[in-house]
Image (cartoon, rainbow, N blue to C red):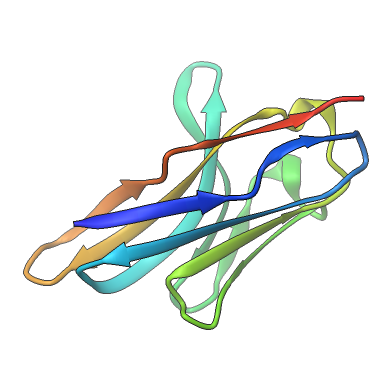
Length: 120
């Protein structure tokens, strides 16, 4: 099985910064992508940012030029640097991984989710 363990998050004032991290572990064969999602009206979750195994990144329009996604040297770790935070960024953020395990096809895995609150 695969586990995604998140860290970071919490309370920050508007204009402040937070750094989130997420580490994938388990019987991993390959990691196609790692990313971050949050709940959205009318759908279960919406993309915030994603990075592929070739370091191609994609961002939601509402976080472009403020958030940066990157992978660690271990390649199974993903970071989300959140700058210039706004109250509307308040949400539970979930780490996501599209991961293949030994002997299994690629599946979606989710972290436990961590609250980010932007408030003065």
